[in-house]
Length: 200
Image (cartoon, rainbow, N blue to C red; front, side):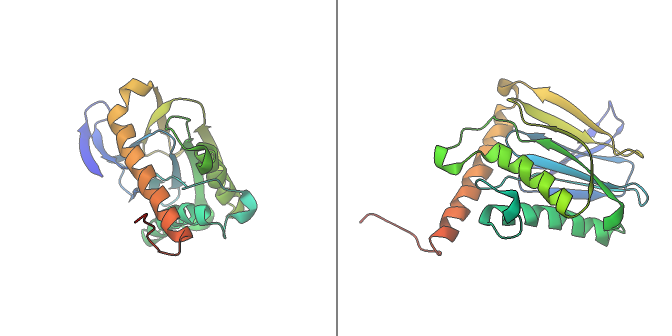
């Protein structure tokens, strides 16, 4: 996570990385990230003027009936509950939240055995919001491009979206690739019961 002042928007922009989230109640701040196959959920309590965004990836396929039980679903649950809990600490109310979803592009390369992770990310986000009765106000997901998003402060929780050519986000996709490798390694360790396997 880092901050930079954006002259165009005349405010400080907080840029979050894969696996991070950020919450603000300041109109002088925007929240931004760059997405490849990961998903970002933007939440706003317009009454309390509190906004938050996360950036996460599931380490494998996901089926909506397994949202609270599956190994992959647990990573999404942690990302969502961390964001919501921090917003509630600031004064937001769960029943006042509305959401927007972005990302889940087919940008990174995955092994066939990993499943369709971009689609699983999208499905998880939509399923979680439906189960928790959080209104989904808008989404821009899927496709074959990365996205840069900036979450600004206004009554509608405006999010600016810019589609990105693959060669323009090489550095950030490297970061997302490292995050993907970490997530898949954690899943493999869980499935092996914490054992480390070796040949000789």
